[in-house]
Image: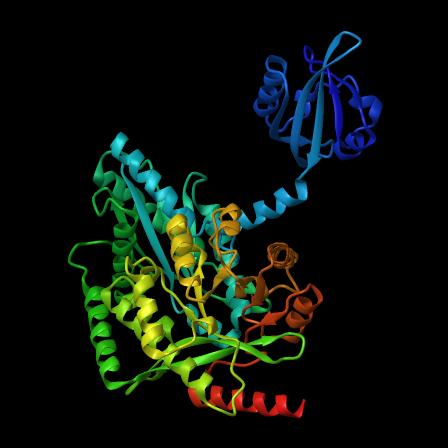
Length: 550
């Protein structure tokens, strides 16, 4: 786009055809138009024009202009001072970056919002709570956090399916929005858990408490009417625990933990009720201690085991790799998945012990497979690396020692880390990744698109693979936004020469979409479920036999 501007009046004196097309204005209307009137924000453009008048040379800014249909256009704009027949002019050259900017904005929006309800996620909630605590400290005003957990929500998912459960969560989020003030933050932490942040409740703690209880009453009233979803009439209640700040905590972590404890007490009190935190609420801490003790015993008794979920090549279904997954074979409760016990220990020292156990057993299995004739070894076995594990000061040396002790080939080992793990300290993350890559390890960014704060960091990280989160794959054939996000991620990975693995593929329609748009690998129940060690080895033996036939 080319525009010739009068530096004094800021009127458009001349333009090319592309400028008229992009701004949706006929050339005769665009000419003599004040360029500042087209700016979405006048200050950046005004600064660019002023700088061009004051200093010689070419100057650059990112500028947003508004087209006639009120759409926002993003430009990389350069400006240069000219003199034509003795008359001072400014030449503006704009490169349209709208598609790129909108794609990045979508990914950035997903970093801070829940994909199902579009409510702020934990990352954004944490930021807002931290700012609220600072304001509270300065002003003396009280605030509060309400922790909502839906009662018996699992029964709806189990009996009617996750699609109905998702519709219920979306309707519930809409009711919360209509009930609360615009200044309040409503966040979905995940599953059926929601948190509400309230500010400006006054300086009197008793009055603040009264306001919180009144707001909690309004929330319960809003949730009470029946939900009519796809021919089903459902009723839903919530157990609510709340904390006041600064009384009950002065950090996000403390407040959320205390609100969670209060919510648990509301559950114990019969559900569909509201409970305020009290320091004596240590029941959950006691339960966590019990789980910790049982896991320590499970380690001693060898009741923990690894399953392996294959990663398949979309083109022909061949196994390329596998992800190691932890299972607990409980003597009383049977096979327990990690989401039932890992949250109980994720902040403690036992988590590190368990993480080392998983890495060591994975390396042992990898070494055994590589040394056993008659198997078709996978290209890699992936291990999930937790936030706490990755940020231990001696993580690199611990990983190196385990690999050397087991005899595993690090070139066939892949570490999966989430975006939130990386963004805690991006510079430290890059240094550790580079140190491990010197050993031959590879890295995958897990759950890509759900927590990344800036795409600019991605190109700095020595990652080899992106894993598209299952939340985008689930509705990729029905939700245009999810489809656009998946295409964007595939485009980013292709541009950067990275492999992409789509997670949670359960239907052929999803696989067809992924194949059509250039995805080469997938993981999910459509291909293979998680397999125990023997079943996984049988798959590798079968792969070797098929290879001989080929």
